[in-house]
Image (cartoon, rainbow, N blue to C red):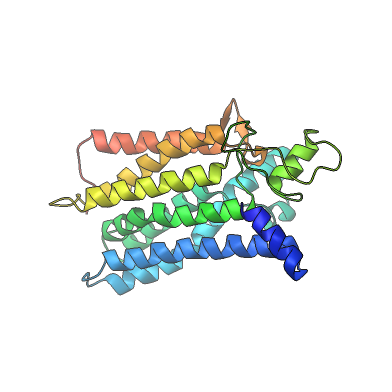
Length: 273
């Protein structure tokens, strides 16, 4: 487990364990983003507007990061009963908010630049699951997005100070002197595997003779990820993600995205170029 690897490195070097945790999280997250950028650039090879598309990709990154903060800010403000600068400046990130904001920013940027958005959106959507798989490995290394408590053979324990440990301690689930969390589902690894499967499906569909119509890879990605995210949320155990009426925030978003993607597919119309 990443957390225990970080613990061993900390003991060997004398550095704080979370130096390694955060470094591993950051490096794997950046690796995932680099993979998406490189994959999109490869998909756009031969497109005369590739350079402009790549500039739009880079310009949309800060907006995607801001979008990833929107859901945590809204949840924290709801719980606190007011919005403060502290809530805006600190807190976590939610992939769904960032991904949807990023894709929306790409579409808007292409429209403003008078470019068809589909070459860029489809290229990004094909490689997004692969990049996201690396991001989920970073989550596993950092201990965030952990799973529900389990007695099954896949259960893993996160070390003292990790999000899982702190939540279990606050809930009174750990005995005095505990040095690790209760066994939990490695939900980060579950999603990494599911993302790789989605990536394989998208690439297989795109490589068929004739390929996919413009916009269809984006629609399949949004639908496929919505389905797997909705199901995998049942394995999650981190209360910080927000639960309302028995479902998490991401499950409500996933249901809405899946409904929209299905509506597009059922209309049997290709997105306008």
